[in-house]
Length: 131
Image (cartoon, rainbow, N blue to C red; front, top):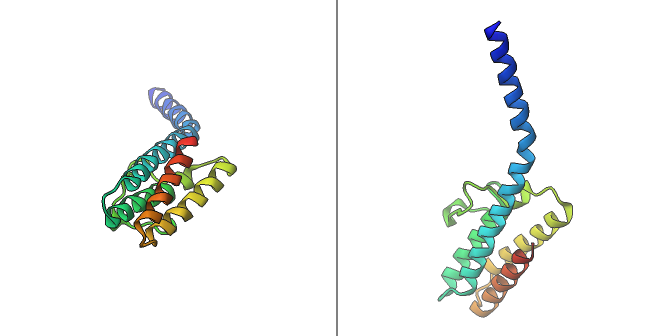
């Protein structure tokens, strides 16, 4: 009887944890968005183009997550524990917004003009803070 009770308790725990998964993913998406916004701010205030590009790549990595379009582990991934915001986002409108911001980050990374790249970073930060 004790084994049956233990199995039933274990099954109940698994079901309970399974129901928390979407909530946990939403929390991780929000965490990744917050970190991306922070790094967009760092890019916007960077002192040279290499730092602007580095922090924009952090933004991109936080948005797309490992395996996402443009993800580069070599650039660093400050959202390693949170994962990527886009794959975890359940709201279609927000996911579209994040996809557009990821495209903007890729544009900023490819832009050699420091003023333009910093403007892109500033715009991304502003949009992410609106979430």
